[in-house]
Length: 431
Image 1 (cartoon, one colour):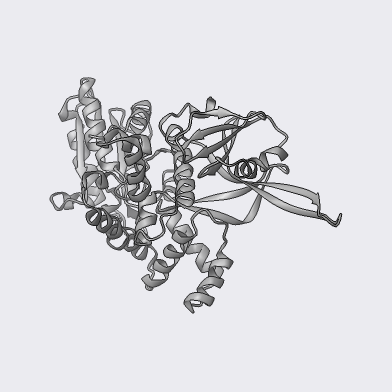
Image 2 (image 1 turned 45 degrees about the horizontal axis):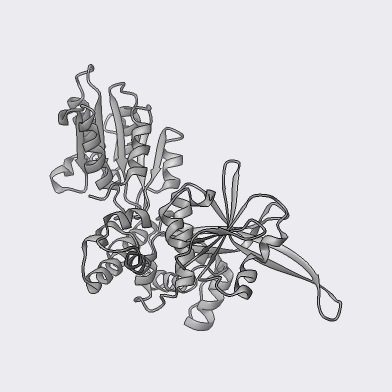
């Protein structure tokens, strides 16, 4: 069993806090396993009896009657009748519960939904409620509006490299190759053959992710979604925007699509936790810049599968993995821009923008990070740290390299660290 300690600790800290715990994340990243196996065993370990843990997998045909919210509410209330006991209610795939007409009112617009059931249970002093939901019906943005501040979200990600390596049978170098190729979807860890891993990851798109989006948003043309995902997969770590993507569709694919539609479809991928968007941040001006942005896949194996594992260049893949690791650690992650004014060889004033791969913040803490395959040659090292020389503040500046190096600092205090150390040691940035 892969220990998902970070998420277990969050569940423990939110236990009996009076809110509905909503576990979100991309499909098949381990939300149900976290709740039904890992958290269930924890509750047993602190003395909670199984009879106090109510588990309903609402996608199971044995529980189809409880897809009616009225039936669901009545069933759970009948079980938690003993007010002297605390009951832990786990509802998996809550979106399977349909919205029905209120049978006690004549008004056709008066309905009952799973939201009504959950808000009702939340008021029970002896009920502690946890739900997971499919991205096709219940997204993080929906949670904020539906529960109006009464839901407590726990975002679950695919396996980090540290989690993956903890379950891997082999050395770190082989683990890294496996991880940057196939990513961290938990089920992939149980598969031995390349073909099986590739088929599973590719199948997730057609059988689950794209089907969810097509159903949720009533989209007829799956081909556009496919092409858009392929294009984003090819340009991971590159600055882009909806207009540029629409122009590429027109010139390369001979497909006419508006920038607004591209933007909308990208938002669908983000809401489904397939993609993340990094905004550009003007470091000197201390403000956000609109377009363009960068897009990263929430799991690098999914990105590689979209391209049939043909484009496995480590520089872009490593950048995506570092981004995901920072998100998992709870940082806000932006793409940094430093404006640089200089004179050319003819003495003419010029202006250019230097890029910092990541500007990360967490409360009052801030770090700058560059991702580089190597800094073995001095010219390459100077190129990577060039933006740092034009940042006047004293926040930590880091270069993460592919090479397995002993961490060191240059004369300007820049920390150089290998990718394995960075991913496996959450304190590495403080060296």
